Image 1 (cartoon, rainbow, N blue to C red):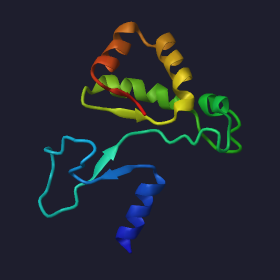
Image 2: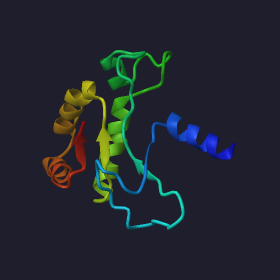
Image 3: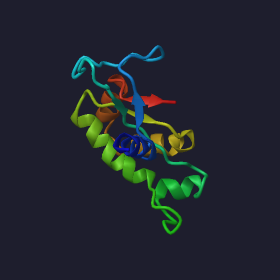
Image 4: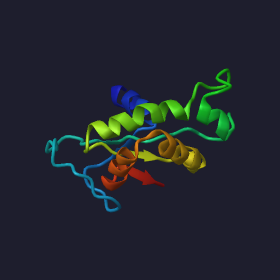
Length: 127
């Protein structure tokens, strides 16, 4: 029962669970593999459900929160400093509907050297 609850929590939070080995993508799993134990790989990513309850613009600026509390700008405000603070951090931005506003935000707000660091270190992945 406890495992079922934990699994449900992971799914509800939108956390991607992956085994230590994958035929599609290779992850660095050398820092904590415990033989005989379940090894979990967490991937930081977005899951905004753009267009489900709110428009793209409402999700981006965080308006109409009586429907759902969500604000892409808040994600970006915390994401950029976190990526710059640790060269090993990665983040996947899933929703393509917010890519244009996101890049406009990055171009207008970030100093060019920080945008260059994020791009060169492979911290930006568009899917």
